[in-house]
Image (cartoon, rainbow, N blue to C red):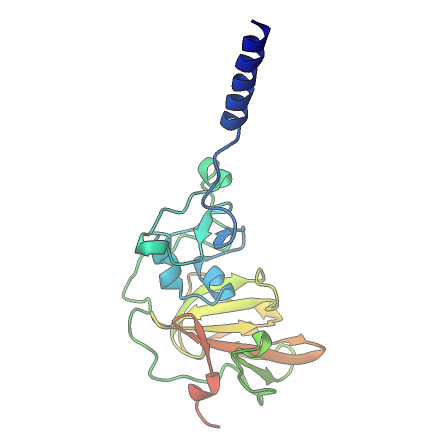
Length: 239
């Protein structure tokens, strides 16, 4: 009798150990990103070298849809080509407040860059390049242009501001402009940002003031094609 009671107690304890463990969260760990307050879809794609359209598709969201602090986004292509819903974080479920820099944008209108790539580019600021492009090095995935502290920084082509903040490590005050479905440009180390997200700008529009890095006044400028860095010197006119 005593042996039977001990056996029954052991079975109960075993079942208890199995059932009390919480289910694993498939939307956590490597390959997933938890949205922070200053993020936008574009800044997350930029940080990880992804095409923003691809990132949106993997997570079944529209490129103009706001994202929320605590929301988890898939950073890798789903296995088998099946796209799963990104599981929202607790804060997303309880408080529908977009990430601070992820203001809801109006869906595509005639004023937004759609499909057509820029047929003309201009220099973002006056000055000479301090380095050359090298995609294999993080700090050379663009060019640094020397100048004077506070001098104007201009949009290199017509487009829409999709990020204006300082939440990306290594970029300081940063502005990202979408020029088409294919091309984005970025302006980093700014002393001051003069445009907000969602604003449509024309080529030549002053969007920031030049800042400094390593005690040298300069602008770090990048162009990305489908999420990948390309040499800006192949797009900017000779001068």
